[in-house]
Image (cartoon, rainbow, N blue to C red; front, top):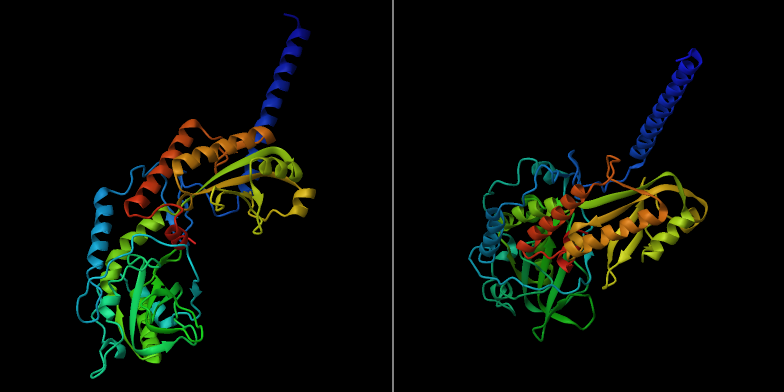
Length: 425
């Protein structure tokens, strides 16, 4: 072999190595830029590392480390505790209320306006899992001698009211001594929501409103004790009871409160379940260069997505409620102006497990849309680690969605139902 041929071979090999090294560097930079852009909180619930769940401050475990569902005994325990709570609503004597099995569309929800005192908040850390000593009876929990209420307060607790679920709502019952108009909505301090239902003079229960000439003979106040902010504490429920007692004094009625310890025994395992299933699956579609906003908008709208007021695209189900969402990689809002003038590195598609009914069927539809958008826009499908999605990964995600929704159904909490919307709003 001549020297000239040897020199050509060496130079050619050097060029090939240089090209390979440059490509590796470019790939590394590309992945680094994408990782820096994934700034939103709705991360994959299925990665090996711990990631944030939808619930504030809570962490979700990787499905790869905890593939199994909650053991059957735990679900049974929640069901048994719920049955026990239905038999123990009292303020000195036991009564038997019946829980409503169906929920109607959510009507007027009144936001509480006063925070719980700071002193109460500091006591929360002492542990709300321990049993508390019985509280001193409130003034209106004792019947007034020589007077009879228009309704029996214990009979009120047995009424199946579709606005409440005794497992999630802490209830206060007020029977009046005389018919009363509701002149103003009560101010009940809590970090959660409450509903006020009244019993009119013709024995009908309805959402109570301050309407002139409408007289009530009793009220039921329900405080939503479980939400994405967590479970209300013993102190917060006791504080709500004091506020309900003041409302009973104002309306001249007798008060019956749900027993706090019994209620919390039921609510704690249900709150733990809610925190566990409240997950959002995120799949990212990314470009190695850029995709124009106009091209992106045309493609997603062709799949049936609409641009919402919150700056995210949403795909509505047959009932008009959003099923899937599309957001930017850095969680900045989409706007018509930006889409018309700006390029994007890609976007994220979100699947909210608790809000989507029939998760198995809807997840197949979700992935079908993701694949179509990836093909139309020339985008890569990746997870939060900027790793290309594998068939095995997708099978794990699908199984995870089915298992979490199965957990919900075991406690009669249907994904996408009115109750689910209320608990996970």
